[in-house]
Image 1 (cartoon, rainbow, N blue to C red):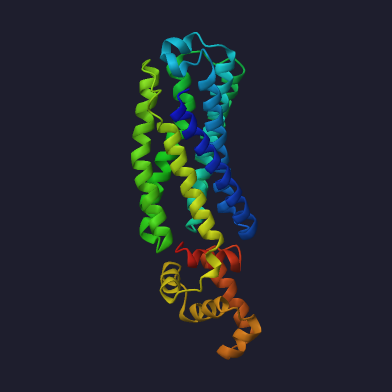
Image 2: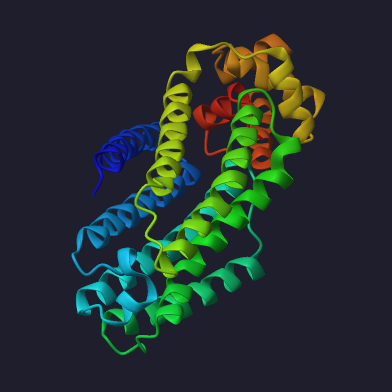
Amino acid sequence: MPLGILLANVASLSTSLGALVALAVLAVHLRSRAVLLLLAAVAFLTADYVLGLALASLPDSPLWRGLAGFAEAGRWTEVVFGLKGICHVGILVTGPLAIQLLFGRTPTRPALWAVGGLSAALLAVMGLLIGGIFPLVPLAVYGVTAFPAYAAYVICMVMLVRLRPSAAGFSRAVVRSAIAALAVFIPALFAVDLLGLSGIAPRMLPIDPIAFFVLSTGILVCSLLAIVGPRRRLAAGDVDAFCLAHELSVREREVLLLLGEGLRYKQIAEKLCISLDTVKTHVSRIYRKTSAAGKTDLFYRIRLGMT
C-alpha cells in the first residue's frame, strides 16, 4: 500500500475513534436515542472501513484485479464481503433513523416495517454469502453488499435536504456541510468502485480514506462543540425559532426561558403567579411537543439550533 494512502488511513481511523469516544460521552450525558443511533452508525462505518483495509491487504484481493480477480478469490474474501454487507445494513438502519430523531421527527410505522423487512432480507443474503452458499458471481456479490451503503448515503442526503429549512444556527451550518460532502463523495466513491471492478486499480486515488476522514472529523468536531454547548446561555433568537418550529404557546415559551435560567418549578410558579401543577403541566407539554428526553436534551437542541 502506498505511503500516502497508508497515512490517510491512519488519520481516518484515528479521527473515527475520537468521534466514537465523543459520541459515547454525548450519549451518556444526553441519554438520547438519536445520539446512540448516530454512535452505532459511525461504529458500523468504522468496522466496514477496517474490513475494507483487511481486504485490500490480501495478496489476492479483488480490489487490485477487478472482476477477474474476484472470480478466483478464496473463501476469506467472501466472508469479508459478507461482513462488510452486514455493516452496510447497519448503516442503512441507524443512519437515517438517527437523522430523523435528531430533528425531532418520529418515523412512521410503515417506514419502520419497510426498512425492517428489507434489512432482514439483506442480512439473510449476507449470511448465505458468509456461509459460502450465495453464488460467487462478482457483480451480484458487489451489488448486494454495496447497495445498502449507497442507499443509506442517498437517503441521508435526501433527508438532510428536506430537513434543512427547519435547522437554525449551528445545526444549519452542519447540515449544509453534510449535504455538500455527500454530494461530492457519493459519486466519487461509486466511480472508484467502478474503476476497481473494471480492473483499473485506483491505488493512487485515496477517495475512501479522504471521505472517511472528512466524515469522522466532522462528527468529532460537532460532538465536541455539542459537549461544550451548555456553557453558552440560551439566546432569545434561538428560543423563538425553537418555539415557532414546535408550536409552543406564549406561556410555554415563558416557562422554557425560566427553565433555561436555572429556576426550579416552584420558583417559576411564583414568578409567573401560577400554581406548581400548572408549571408541571406546561413542562410536560413542552417535552411532548419537542420530543425531548429531558431538560438537558431540550437545551442542547435549542443552543445548537436543532429542532
